[in-house]
Structures are given as C-alpha cells and as structure tokens.
Image (cartoon, rainbow, N blue to C red; front, side, top):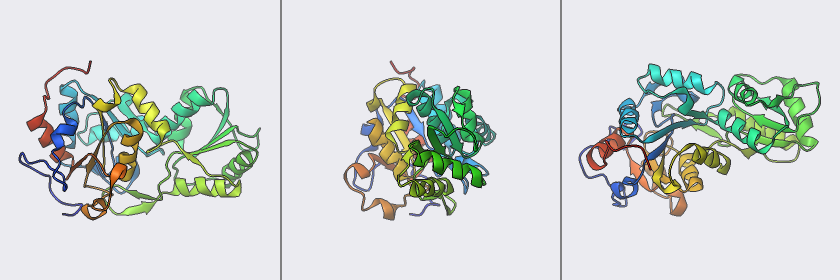
Length: 304
C-alpha cells in the first residue's frame, strides 16, 4: 500500500495484527477528526488549497445525522477557525464554525483559563491573535511592558522586533508556548518544515528554556476537547494520520483511529508498539465511512 491507495471496502475491517475494528468503535459517540492527511489532501495546514479525501464529506454528514458529536481539529494556527471551516464547507465537508478547533484557538482557550489577567505576546498571525483578543486577553506589543506569556503560532513572516520582545519576555520569566511542536508538516502531499515550531525553539534557545506545546498532542488540548465533548472519554474517538493524533487520543483516554492517507505509512506503522500503536487502523476516511455504515447504528440519537 502507499499513501495514494484506495479505501478498504467490504466487511473484513481488520488491522495488520488482525484486530476487529468494530469492537473498539462500537461505543463511540463523539469524534475528533483531523484535517490534513485525514479529511483533506493538502500541502498547506488547515486544508488550505487542498482537496477532500474520498467520502470525507459523507462521513461527517453521516456522523451528524446519527446524533454523534463531531469536532474538527487541526494544528493549523495561521488563520481563524471560521476561515478554515469555510474552506471545508466549500469542499463539501459541512462543519459549523463553532465545531472547528485550531491549535491557535486551543492556545487561546488555555491561556484564558490558566493565565487570567496575563499580558500575552502572540508571535504569529491573526489565527492566534484573534482568538486571544476574542477571549478578552490583554495583548502585549514590542516596546511596551514585557509579556507574562508568549505564544508562538504559524505565520507567513515573523517580525524581528516581535521575536526580540518574545526573547526578552521569556528570558525575564514569561511562560513560553507553541501551538505545534512537530518538526515536519505532512498533509498527504509532500512535507514541509514546521516554521512556527522552529521559531518557538529559537526563542527558547535564546532564553535557555523549551516551549510547551498547546496543540496536538498536548494534555492541554486534550483537556480543551474533553470539555467540549459529551460523554466519557472512552466513547470518544480521535481520527488522524499522524503520531500526534495517536498521542492525543492517549492523553484523552479516547479510541485512537489511524488512517494511512498521510504522515504514517504502513512501513512506519509496522514498528509501533504499545501506546504508540493505534487502536484502529484503516486506509482512509472512506474505509471508516464504510465500516460505520455497515457495522454501527448510524441512526441513533445524541449521546446520553
């Protein structure tokens, strides 16, 4: 198999180890779905400029019709959630703005909850600064009083004076966060370096510290998602193409479902053991749609 293969069809939905997928998914009533390499094939984060994976829109629509809770979650942070959600709707994946979570919006949730009253310096674009401002967070600026918290997100360019202000603040004791902490981005079309993580670690290097991640697979994001979703963690599934989603599922106590349409290929899956190995393995979201259509009660009401 390769990352450009077709979906698994038929009724024999088994992982390479022979595990029946339906057992793990039968009680799931809430879903966290990744975007890049999962719902969308793209070379840019958040599904930007990409094309939908086969049956991606059908899967989301079917889950909603069944009364299941669905949150779309991406480590993208350059644009506000509403812009990413609008692009998915244009591609036939119907997701309301309020059900789209970015690493930027999750970072804003964490800062507002855990650093009340703090002065925060966003090192990134509107996808980070906007959610922070919307939650009433005081935004620090270069040349003003030093920030209490520095958060690094994605941007097309980073201003020298902002990076300098971030280094000075962190060196003076400010908390340092990054929206993502993986070195490479893989959305199903090649790969590219994660510039925001590189910037965050450069700031940390200058101030002799390391950034804490607020996006996938952090316990901070797990906390944010569990607050949004109904029911116990064991009735939640996290679906994605990378180790970040596997580790996020472990942090949430959720069912980890890997699709082989992005970062993790069958060759990369083979050596994974223990908590690093997903509970469910499928070719893509089309295979997940087929599995749920055949094996699960897709017409039941909302979770109790």
